[in-house]
Length: 238
Image (cartoon, rainbow, N blue to C red; front, side, top):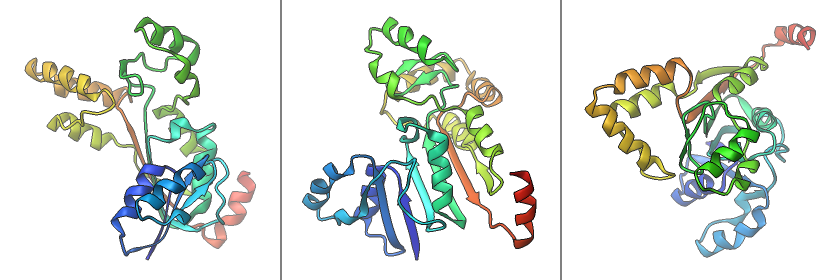
């Protein structure tokens, strides 16, 4: 049996609705989650799976969950690195963390469905969004997660093995042109159709992977067990 934590309401809702018997303990953490209890009751789901908490302080003990899954939520937190640290804390050794979040080192901003200049800072992002006739206020609530920021966080950890950051998923989607038409991706799909007719999709794919501008980041990590003899080594490093 598995214990699953999903720091994202809709994903947890889908897991709960499946009634998957292999999941022994499902929890969904949402900041302000009390407003969702009525929704769960209306749909015949157990409201107890909702935990009203932010990802920066997950109210569960160490080594508690087998799987942590989050989709398009990390960029909405106050401190993504702290959320990832907390997620690893409650993850069991050998457990798997799977987070999907945008790469602001890419050429597309999904919340506004706009072209994006890679690594644009917030102070330049606001006039850029305004240039397209959009309200930039929401931009101030977003954390600009990106490939290199994530790699720096991974390098700071001594207890994880990186499985993937989603490069192969991006390459497969580009090869098969299998993009979902949501969040403005229909525009990307049309641009890819033009690239396909020009026969430059392989080149575009290679450039995006080479420059680490693929999107989204699909981060999969496995938490390592720390052998008893390694504690002294880790203590010296800290």
